[in-house]
Image 1 (cartoon, one colour):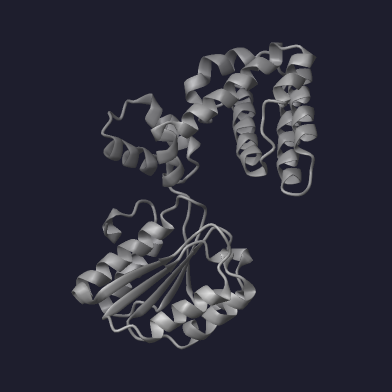
Image 2 (image 1 turned 90 degrees about the vertical axis):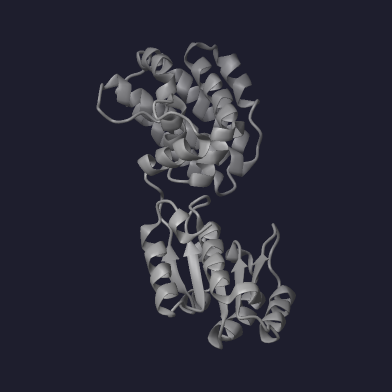
Length: 309
């Protein structure tokens, strides 16, 4: 993997290439952006470039995991940095927002007094959760969402399929600018889950009220999962609005065009706008302490009611 293999991140790649070519690579970078934008892949690509420069005397270390990063882990990192005898040493701190405040303060000392040949790459999808002092000690390179056409090209090449494959465009649109998410969809698990959610949404307009309430019980109460599902709700109803008004906007769910066209006849523009607003508000409430089952049941009943007006 080299920097030439990074898709859709022209600005960060250009800056990093220039630093490598001129010997002015910074000692600490912060890569921020949503999951699946290529942050860690880019850091590893830089590590590969440095390894080519330093040969076998180069090392890569990745500080990862699911829990928080404590001060002892950072102290261990600092000790290894102090005694490193390699030409180039790269440290990737994955999901840097996991660092506790004491850990962040401990890392600051290392960032303020960089050791020649040691490079830090911090990745995060929650940049505002980092201490401002950590951000200020790094060169901050935001990673942007990747263009849908670029994701299509990437999928065609990686999966070895024809450009005319309808699944390519569907997955690229669902990925919302994330290569990681695009590949998850392509491999099947997310695509199958999406199909199950859409099967439920298709039932709502013609189901009875008790059946709709029953549907609300089929969702888990996992906040992260419900948040993703509400995005599918939004995309579905925006597609209904698009087809109802025969606009030129692209569909989020082009593979369900026939079903969407039929269901759009059940709704008025007013009811669709109201449903979209309520889904959006529920998404915000879910980030707090809203009762998931109650909120989901309310929104599903609103979808049912809207189909009758």
